[in-house]
Picture 1: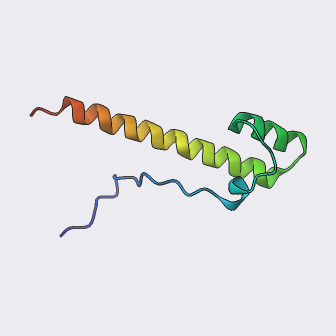
Picture 2 (picture 1 turned 90 degrees about the horizontal axis):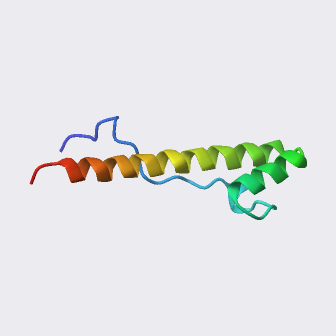
Length: 73
């Protein structure tokens, strides 16, 4: 069995500890803004990176769904 190609991205996004135990509530945008207001750079960076990774994951999933729909039977 051959190893998977490097172009295949994993679908799982690991949630950092800073995001799991974030002291702020609300949507990701609201939590990022609260972290910014409190100058909590570590949490703000973790929230932004996690949000961006989830967006990339969703786009990849949608691309795969679209591609599968276009394949001939």
